[in-house]
Structure formats: structure tokens, C-alpha cells
Length: 75
Image (cartoon, rainbow, N blue to C red; front, side):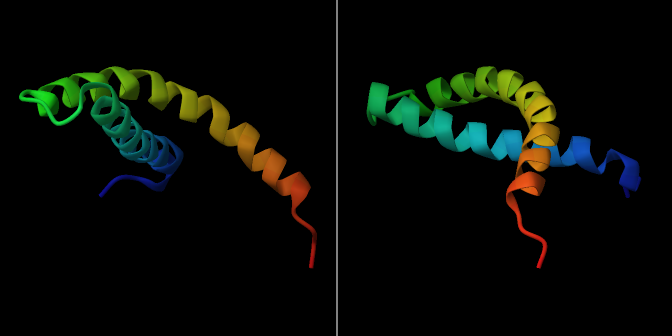
């Protein structure tokens, strides 16, 4: 098992991977269509997107958590 202290990094890795997979897939299909080799194009786009998305999530997540904390009411 992975120690709890790595939770935020693992969360960012998984979230950025899943979201970049989804978004790059949609963008690839819209741009190229269902052509031969689209899966290869998609995987290449996904890897590039994930390289950008992972550090972006690592930077954006703490800020987003603070904003959510400010927006929520204490009930």
C-alpha cells in the first residue's frame, strides 16, 4: 500500500490522467474522426496532455480547495 502522505499526489495523478484521457479523446475524435490510426493519435495526444495536466492539477488543487472553503457556508 501507499502511505497516506502521498494521497494528494496520487489524487492529482489519477484525476489528471482520467480527465486528460477523456478530453484528449473527445478532441481527437472531433479533429480526426473515426479514421484508421485514431487510437494511436489519441494516445499520443493523451500523453502530451497528461504531462501538462498533472502539474496543473498539483498547482490548482490547493487553490481550488481554498476557494471552495470560502464559498461554502458553515451549517
